[in-house]
Length: 169
Image (cartoon, rainbow, N blue to C red; front, side):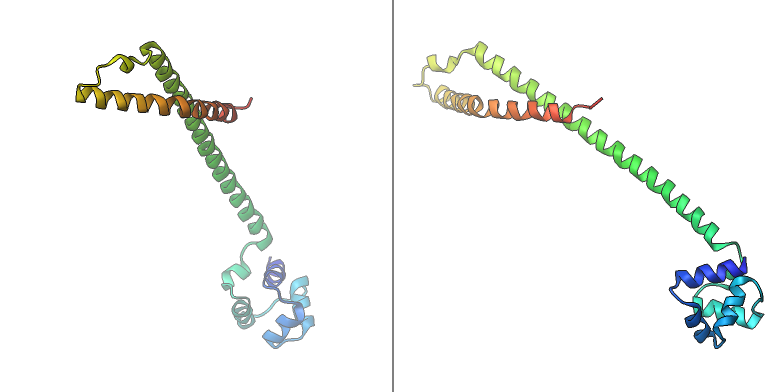
């Protein structure tokens, strides 16, 4: 384990055997022997290695680093999978909410259209000499005029939105 740890940590820190040897005041062959398992550094040298590689001695002597990296990658990938699933669920919920809001908007527009058709612009027959009737008639006529011109555009855009946000099977 020690030999694999020294090698993998050295490489992860971007050191060559020569560079590590210089920092530890040993020859490159000593590093090579440690990494091949032909010799083992003494306790003082282990402390020096841990300082140069910026890791605790326990990590240097502990489990195989490459195995723990695989475990770490597996844990990270599982977390990413959970996050992606949550983001997908939020996106689907948002899409569903927008879909139903657009359906509600289309329904309201159609109800108002039917209501206006059934009323057949009754304000046209009102007596506008009465100030309250005049104000109410002008407001009603303004609403009807604006609604008849804007609502079809909103209705078409909403129908397109409903089609685009429907769940694809």
